[in-house]
View 1 (cartoon, one colour):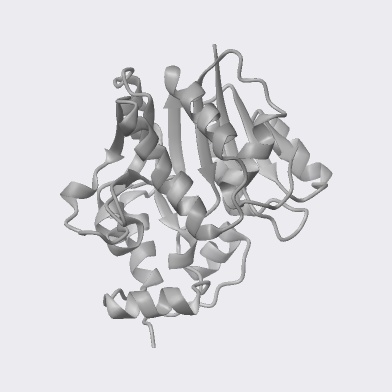
View 2 (cartoon, helix red, strand yellow):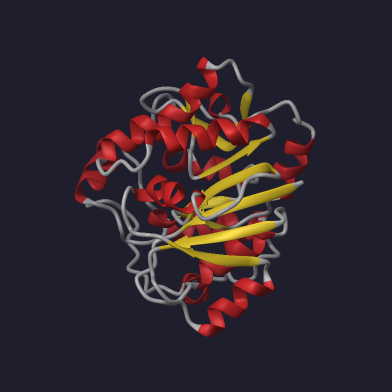
Length: 273
């Protein structure tokens, strides 16, 4: 039986950034085959060698339809005949903790057809789609759903059809699904816990943090939304928590190390103006 991980990422150059390499190295050990799905037509030889070292390979697609558009294009190039576990992940987070607890929990939940790392009540209840695992009959349900909906260019429709729609589909079919971290324990209401409860999540072993929380890469709409709900962005605070709860991640020793980790220049800001 096979297990497959589809890793969707947007690359600005034909080079895989350090944070994606760390993420790939961390997740690929849980799957028999990992596919890096990207629109960049040709990666460097050193990056291709890296992918081979972690039992991963690259699948080239067009940059349309956001992550799910990439997944949709990729599935026609991959055989899922013997696949009993399928993960879909993307590069909106970087890995700052251990994935072992999630996969240990998942092994004890063989009845689940879909599992996520975190759920949310934003708009409506759903499992957040940046890290989802389908298993057994859930693999076919996901692939069929992807084929049925195809590439959607409009962001709001993508959110409705995929971010929210996948959970809706499994719920309507009465298929069991669950998340490892549960929003009901974090008193966040209808706001996205990946942003508004990230400190508490990190302190409880959450293995991801949004890139946007450490980089000045928010849209003006995001900034206004966060200001209204009094969310203060404090990268130093997040780094301190990560360093305390994940001491093995020695790259998190301050901004200089973080720059190396991300492979991206940082323009940090502590509060929204």
